Image 1 (cartoon, rainbow, N blue to C red):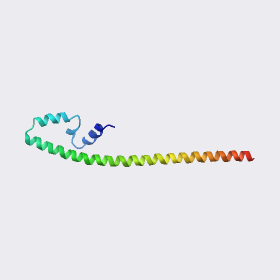
Image 2: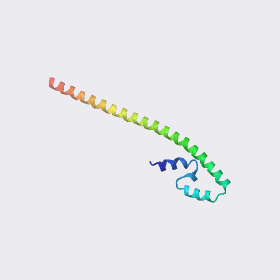
Image 3: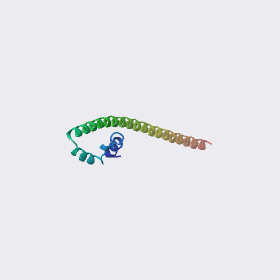
Length: 102
């Protein structure tokens, strides 16, 4: 995952004109616009970037939660494997002792 990919992934749902591949087209559009049209479009862009910031914050929070939960699951699996290995070792020692006693 790259920063560009994440930016475009979020922005495609907000304002596709602001995708990284479309910025050059928007630049041309703004150069040919009247001052009023340019101001209006830039105001829309500002709104889009504000929405983007909120969306990115949501993605960040969700991703952090998911990563923390994943880490917990991996730790739980490791603990279970470790406990199972210890149980197996204890059973092996007990069997050896039983075999040696009998």
